[in-house]
Image (cartoon, rainbow, N blue to C red; front, side, top):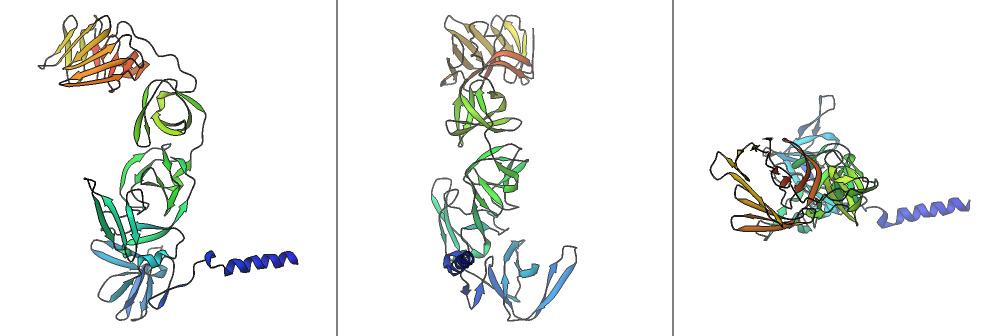
Length: 420
């Protein structure tokens, strides 16, 4: 018996605790309920309609001067519609008198309110107003006020009509990496119909602060996907970087080197996400190995085009051998010239000069010169094999500028065929 008395006391304390539930809220002489946007009355008796699931319509007559709660507002094609309870919708006319509930009063009914623009006539339809992502200085009063930055970096103040804002509860999930379980388009807001950008494939991973709103999870810096299409990423084992590669990390780029070791998180057909020293990197899938890769190749000879080559076709121009160490295209000022010294390989194509210090290996120095510009860097990678439209080449050199060279052939980016 004592056990039941204790349980009853706990229940009574819970019900009496004002923090355990929202108190009844009064505004303009009537109770306001969660999800309500405003209230309306009619200047005379009118008939309102709703569409049923089977395609038929139901109607009811509403009396003038009686007030009705409004739960949603639609604005499009210069028209406004108010949604009443039970699915009835009324277009704004002279017969309708609508009063919006101030936004801050509506927000008081929520534990963790989130604000979404639902005005289809506004370019910001679907926008989620959350501080620290795109917007700042957010203030909730009768309407929503916020600031953002223009192209010159100046702060610009804005105001959104509170009636154009839907309030929903914000849910907190675990922070971390989430991946898509199906192909999906990224959206700029947590609502069906919000503006979208590129479509990402199944397996694509995103960092997330775990903010869920309206059934969408915010990932990256202000992008949204349905939570039903995302799942937390689990670590899948050790991986090695096979060759030097540029990785994406937190919106910026970082160069990873052969032998760098990490843990595979997830991958799709082209991209893999790995964790190295607590940072998450996205890299080309082919750049990863399950076992420690071989040492980088070292190129000491035959790096430049060999003497047997007679023609190089780059699609936009066909270069034919005209002399030792020289190819020329039919167009003026299109040529390939190259030579070797004791310390360097020197290659020039259409006025762009490349100088490679010997021996050529990952991390060895090189320069690229064109016009009055000189760029210095280090060889990013040497691929044991590399396939282009022209064929498969061995010990292919990838420069820090993204240019690709094959020993015995020279510059092969864009090369479609060759003749010996």
